[in-house]
Image (cartoon, rainbow, N blue to C red; front, side):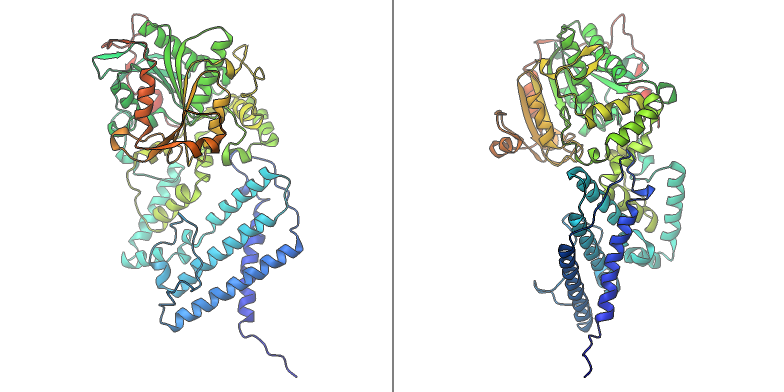
Length: 583
């Protein structure tokens, strides 16, 4: 008696094998050089999944492949329209995934199937990663990150043969889009990076970083800019801004309508700003202590002397806030009281959870850095840019691969993305010390653990009032970790949570009245408890901060119309030479 055979069984078996092949390729990819993050990291040791759970996952995957196959057959019988009811089977992308939003992906049954089968296979791989036994939570999170990188890279939207938008545009333009795409690729190879914006639309000093000011001091690592007043009266105490040295300062001074620097000046502050040097090989020997001494400590001394005051107000952004806080801890250890108030924007002082950046900083990667650039050299801007782009690869890499090279499009002019592409180098000893002592060992939060500039530092001895801003969707400085600073600083702290991410949450002009922020003066609870009781306020946190800062103005005086003084004379107009140097 013959057995009944399923005519679709061979096709189903091939579909199952395709998904499993993707998984096998990924686990093979883990051992390849391409899997190594720019910051390094030890290889991940992956064990064998539980056989019963693996079998269950494969059965579920097979069932979904059958449902997809049947849905495509049904759609074909109905002339491509398919069943629009809620019960019709369709594999949908995750929220926020716009790669397959163009109608071309649905108009053709071939590309519709390519789209959905990729999403189904990707889901299978993600679930397989969850089953994979690994050493610890950090290794599992790293495995998840690498799976995302791999899946983003092999998406059909990235390849000419499997992207219907590429094919349609090539036909419509009679191949001109292909020519333009090749030209875009050649230009980007020459530049050594993917173009994210129209670089010709911007120039630092012409339409970026245009707030009027003067460089009044410089050393090997920074220039100090004093901005021209925009009010007749100003606070007696000036405001010193310390931006991150990982990027250039003009994120805080993009254009007049979204310049935080200009806003601070308009609020009646004499503003000084540290413009970090984009270091070259000759500065490759500088370390963490050099950045403290030649950065905020030097800048604070100059600002106090120019304005003839004992105290200034100080603000640090991202790693600039970490550097500034470290400098203040050094001053506290020396018995100096130079700062009246401290503002920290998206800053880590406790490094217990550093998001995905921290996944690839381990003993092996730090030892490698210590033995190489830790003794002198550079962590290049290209490495840093690659690291941060990898955190949002679909938005900052593959989106432009498809747009620039497949479709032959020219990126739109966008000031934020121009800044994002204007990368900077870091001295190797500075970077190696930073990664080991802060990201790996999380030593800054422990009183007396670290010695800086000859002093044992204790953040608890920083006694001035502090305004701490974090942002809710920050993938670089998780807001819950930034909240831990309220437990470390010794003065009265105010914590505010902005909407959006690491940059957009900070650069949120008050005049546009966009987004919102959360405030709660009671910081006794943990981070989630604080948020549960916080009040959401519409608009920008800038206005709230400006009101807080006025409490620490130290009175008013006539605005200083001439920059510098007899000792610190004008060197050149803002934004200065250092910010224009390319990596």
